[in-house]
Image 1 (cartoon, each protein chain N blue to C red):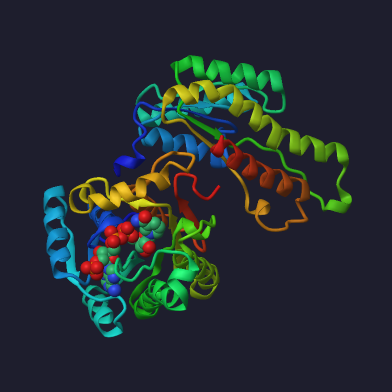
Image 2: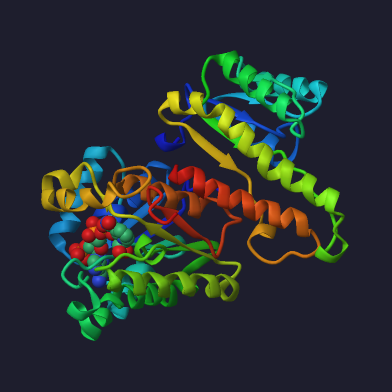
Length: 242
Length: 177
Ligand SMILES: NC(=O)c1ccc[n+]([C@@H]2O[C@H](COP(=O)([O-])OP(=O)(O)OC[C@H]3O[C@@H](n4cnc5c(N)ncnc54)[C@H](OP(=O)(O)O)[C@@H]3O)[C@@H](O)[C@H]2O)c1
C-alpha cells in the first residue's frame, strides 16, 4: 500500500513523534495533517515542514473535545489513516502511586479517552482499507517504579487495540509502544532538559540509548502501509521490554 | 524512499530464500539497495533465484550459497562463505524451517527432536557463527521468522509451534546479550 495521495491525520501532530509522522507521511506523498491545541506549536510545525521541504498541513484542534476534533476530521475526509500521538505534558503525572494517587491516574487516562474519541469520530470518515494507529508506551510492557500513570494507560490502549481489531475490521488498528523518546533535532533546542532528563533511562536498555521521534514515526508508517497488520502491539523501545 | 528503509551498502544472508517469504525478503532487500546471499539446500534453485534477482536489479546484487540447514557443519561452513563473499554481513534473515503435522498426542519423539533442532538450535548455530561479522558491521541485525502458531496454542502443528515460540524467546535472549 502506498501513501501517495492518501490523507493521513495525526492528533498530536505538531510536536515529537506525531510531527515526525506528519513529515514522513508527507514525504511519502500523503496529504498529511497534524492537529494540536497550541497555535504557537501549529505555527512552529508549519515552519519545520517548510524547512524540511515537505508540503504538510497543521491545524488547531483539541483531541479531547469531540466537536473540535470532528470538525477538523470532516474538513479532510475521506481519510485513509488516523493516528493518536497526543501527550499532554501538564497532565501526564509522573511519580509513584502514593504521589499521583487516583487523581493522577485519572489524568493519565486522558490519553486513552482522546484515543477513543478519535476512533469514534473518524469511524464513518475512514476509507474501507483505512487504519488507526495509537501510541501507548514501554512502561506497560516492562514494569518500572514511578511511571504507574503511563503503565495503566498503556495497558488500556493495548487491550483496546486487540479487541477493536476484531470489531472494526476491515479497518485496521494497531498500537506502538515507544520507549523513552526524544526529538534529537528539535528537543535539543526547544526542550534540552527533556533530552538530559531521559538519557539515564536509555542506558538501562540493550541499545543503551533513548529513541528518536523519527524512529517511532517510521513504525507508524509501516503500520499504515502494510495492509495485513492489525491488532498488533509494536515495540519501538531499544529493547526496553525484553 | 524513506531513508530508514535504505539498505544501500548492506549485505544480508537469508536462509530458505528460494521461495515463499524468504524469496520475497531477498527481492525487497535488493529493491532497497542491499546485496543478498540466497540460501537453500538446492544449488540449482539458489542459482536460479540469484540470477533472476540480478536480472531484475540490473546489478550484481545476489549471490547463491547453498547449504543444508539441517547439518551443523554445513551451516557453519555456509555462514563463513556467505560472510567472505562480500566481506561483510549486516543482516541475518533466519527463515529456513521444517514443520510436522500432528497434535501433542501423536508426536513422534524423533520428529519432535528434529523440528526443535532445526528450527531452534540450528538458528542459534547460524547466529553465533555470523555474530563476529554482524558486530563488525556496527548495524548488525538478526531477524528470525516466527509464526502465529508460536503465539497461541496450535495443536495441529504442535512441534512447529513450540519451536517457533522457543525461537522468539531465543531472539529476546540474543537482544539482551
Ligand atoms: N516521548 C516519550 O518518551 C514517549 C514514551 C512512551 C510513549 N510516548 C507516547 O508517544 C506519544 C507522543 O509523545 P511525544 O513525546 O512525541 O509528545 P510531544 O512531543 O509532547 O507531543 C505531543 C503532541 O500532542 C499534542 N497534544 C497534546 N494534547 C492534545 C490534545 N488534547 N489535542 C490535540 N493535540 C494534543 C501536543 O500539542 P499541544 O500541546 O499544542 O496540543 C503535541 O503536538 C504520546 O502518546 C506519548 O505518551 C512517548
